[in-house]
Image 1: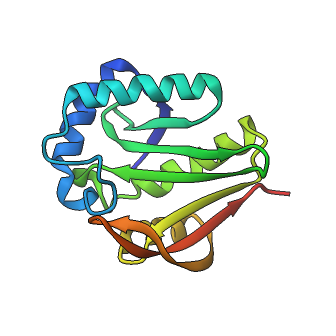
Image 2: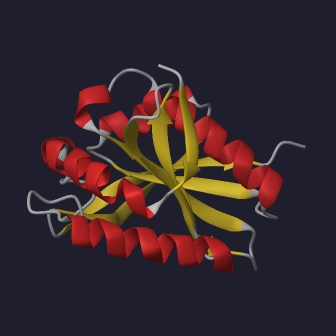
Length: 171
C-alpha cells in the first residue's frame, strides 16, 4: 500500500478519533492513549501539542495517509536528546489497514526525514516483548535488534520486557 507522511492538521482530529476507536483492540495494549472513549477533544489537544512540539523541535509527529489521502495512522520521533543525538521512533496504524505494509513504509519515510532534517544519528524503536507486530515492522525496515530490556515498558499497567531496535544515520 502506497502511503506518505505529513504534519498533522487540526482537521485530522475526527478521523484520528475514528481510527483510534476502531483500533483499540490492537493498539490499546501497547499505547494506553488509544482507549474506547478516545474523543475528538483529546485528538485536537494532542494535535495542537505536537504541532507546537514540531515548531520547537522537541517532537516530530506525522499523520500517515494512503494514496487517496485517507488517514491510516501515525508515526513520530519523540523523546529527542540533542545532547546524545538519539530519539525514540514510534508508530501505529489503524486496524483496517494493518498487515498491508503501511507501518514499514511510513517508518522508512520518517527515518529518512529525521536524518535529513535533524542532527540525530540514532533512532530507537522500543517494542514490548509481546508486541510481535511492532517487532516485525522494525525488522522489515532493517532496524538492528540491539537488546531485550527488562521491565522497560508498561503493558496494561504492569512492567514488561521490551525489545530495543536501532536505525542509524547512514554514513
